[in-house]
Image (cartoon, rainbow, N blue to C red; front, side, top):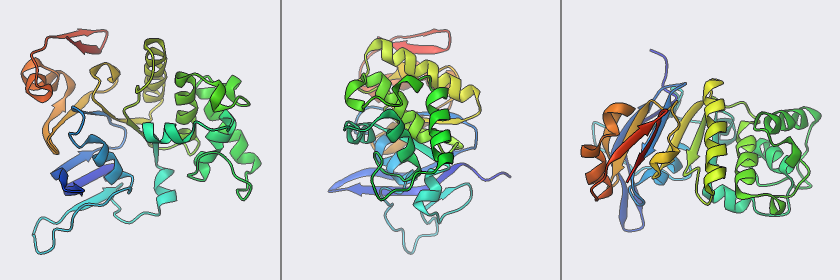
Length: 263
């Protein structure tokens, strides 16, 4: 069997005095388009930080079911090598990018896992070509020489996506992708993500906004209280009887052209 893109087994994480993840196991195959959905504080972002090696699970010494995190079947990765396989886009990273860097600088910084380009970093001609290709793919070539301070939130989010794409990763990991975007920018972002999904790039999206889920996402994982509450095909998971207890309020669902909304 082909190794999973991401495989987590019996993962528990403490954040201060709080259990952020409680014995979570999850397998995501290469090429899958998956959404991890749940309210704020349910453990979604911590799960992403475990995948990207920003935090580590508790030891389960002496237990038969030891915790394990593997990417493409490997448990040990150089962080720089890992980031060439998984393109990361998060709100935390977006905050760091709001400086006097140009769109091209932000895209190029993906090669160095930095934010912007600094004097000690050697940028090659090949890197510049790949950065410009990524900007073009995301339809923001006109932002190459514009600073992030001159961009709208939607434009800056696309440039950040370009940063994640310069390595031609197998998958994008998106943490709350529509945060701080207005309705038009959200629509543009969804169209870009659809384009990337159709190009064969896996999408792993973490969000509490049902409207973020593009039609290409066919699997949904629900999280509540640091645990996985449900996992399965989108049409089986996105139903009122599952979402009402998750979000703690009565709701009705509507679906149109592959997009879901509730009220």
